[in-house]
Image (cartoon, rainbow over the protein chains, first blue to last red):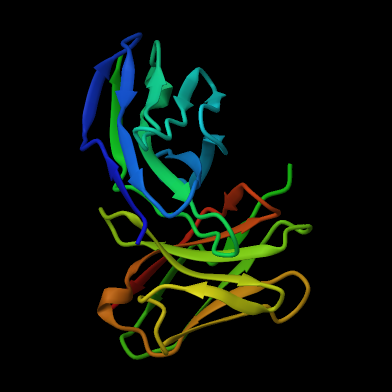
Length: 113
Length: 111
């Protein structure tokens, strides 16, 4: 079945530091890839997506590139802010009629001022 | 901006009782989902629903669970006889095609 391996947390960074959260997946075919973010006490929000190989998703300064050859979708941000403190989930979505997301274990990010 | 809503935000129930969790998906969406997140664990898929029937379900979604779209707007998850291990945050999501939009969740506590 589909699976996601996500960088273990928690991750603690100082404001303006560079962020990388690694994500690799196994899936049948070529899934669409998503990063979701969960702020404290809130639900899941879509952060960015990529639907085919070499696509780069970006939003709010975050980026991730769909790497088919390494089955990876690593999340990066050049300069994190305190407001980025949240849990980040990598989630491939199957192609075809089965559309459910398979979530990684989540990575807790804390950004200190 | 349209959003997925869920009620109640928190439900406390006794073991063995039935609960119904309610969701109002985004109005023009066609695909509906339930996921759950046990405290401190990953988000797990339960069931997907399309064209008034279940399109996919996970091993977690056993005979104790059922889903229904009773009218044009609501999408419900029923747990027939709750167990302690059903305590979790339950998220509803809906999508038109690609992106799934999640509700804020219902925290279910089974005592």
